[in-house]
Amino acid sequence: MKKILSAVLAVAMLCTCVLMFTACGGNNSSAASDASSKTEAKELHMATNAAFEPYEYKEGGEVVGIDADIANAICEKLGCKLVIDDMDFDAIITAVTSGKDDFGMAGMTITDERKQSVDFTDPYTNAVQVIIVNEKDSPVASADDLKGKSIGVQMGTTGDIYVTDIEGAKVERFNKGADAVLALTQGKVDAVVIDNQPAKAFVAQNPGTKILDDPFENEEYAICLKKGSELTEQFNKALKELKDDGTIDTIIKKYISE
Ligand code: ARG
Image (cartoon, rainbow, N blue to C red; front, side, top):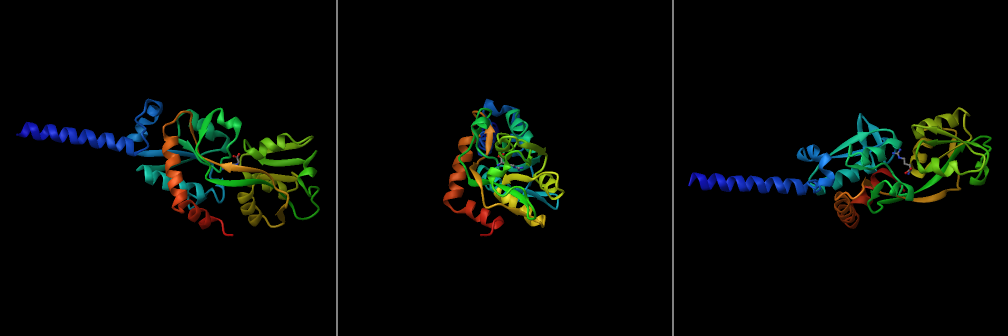
């Protein structure tokens, strides 16, 4: 009787283990085995750059924002604990391809070039690149004026990529968007090209700057994962549910009022 009981217990425990693994993103696949120690702790590690309000920024030492909230909602659906790993924006893709982190989420635009190294989920929101200038005596009044000017960007972003293509432009690359905007206020660059929502936050923090009504390059943000990761499908399923039940909208409205 005792033997039967312990056998039953053993099987039950085994089942629980298997369930735990699949509940936490199916990381029991060999493709994700380098993250298996994390899986046992039921954690999913997110690579981000928390200097991009309202998508990810620090509040009292904690990373908050639209991406952090959406990531938390996805992890909750997958039965995992979210761990946020803050780094420079241009380190995120390598963190994901190397398996150091399970996914990257950082107001990251889907681009063909990035698709060569990572997989993207379906997009969860849209954005647009805008130009920030000084309110007074700016030599830049439209996107066409960017030719031959010095332009600040956050290193490795799509803003960096677009501006690099502009004829005669002198591109000044900063680790943080905030540093690019600081350089603008100090007259060290003529303009900053960056995503519209963070641009609003930077302008609010830097009186004397403004956003031009001449946006260019519409973009879509998505989560990036290691190529071939089984998590991508699970993330897409979770994202769809969160879109359909209005959670994503509610999260975005919590941070963006209009
Ligand atoms: N959307 C732009 C890109 O994908 C900028 C993203 C910057 N994000 C950040 N958390 N700093 O390149």
